[in-house]
Image (cartoon, rainbow, N blue to C red; front, side, top):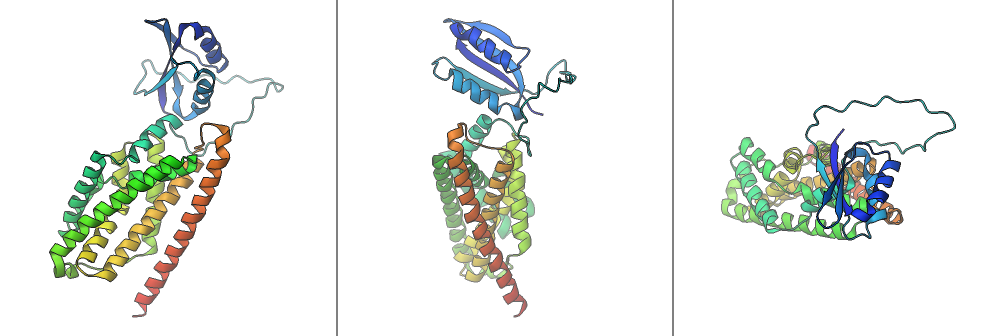
Length: 339
């Protein structure tokens, strides 16, 4: 259970209307304070996982007011600790509407959007992080140094755009999808260029490195890692922690593909790039499934149909690509076993 402190800024003339609204929403322990310029602030605590509906209704009712703002802040601790309220049996005739089952607890949609929107931004800092992680990963691969490779995973920003792409698909946000796809492609191109140039410098010495190959276990690892990364984001986990868990399935095979291509080992390069493609497909597919199970929906009801259409189409495309990838893996392994 993640608690959030909510502060609502509004004109003093609308204080009674806001107070009545919050009272009907069964909000308790509300603190009111005045501000210069005939404005007031209402503050209260709420549970992040169940607050989307409240924030949507507040936005719908008061968004026309220029002074209206909602600020959501994480709560580290409360002293004294809040006590769980005892449930009181209600008369049979006063049944409340049944809520939709929640499969995965998560923070609010607004918080998720702000976090994930940063992953899709093609900024100068992002490009620098891609370059740094690629160089560190290249050193780790060429020297067979696992600690160095893990260090690259902590830096690696490749997961962010892929999960942002999945999130935008579930919401039907075309702009977020386009921005995420562009950022992911640019990051991939930069890493490949660095690896290819490095491969040209090393030349024949790369032939001593083993062919990475591709197995079904690589696909399973990528799918599970993608789901773990999405769940971590749903709970408000840090991007660095997600990078440690998931980037291991994205950056190393991409760097190996570029290194082998630069060294003229095209079969090795193809195998490594297939691993990268399989992992990218699985991360996106797992991300879409996870966000759907968490009940991520657009803010307005009239956007839900478009979002469902985008989600189903994306699931179909990624699933077809995954089946093709599985078939390629099985054929390659069958060919190798009969050589």
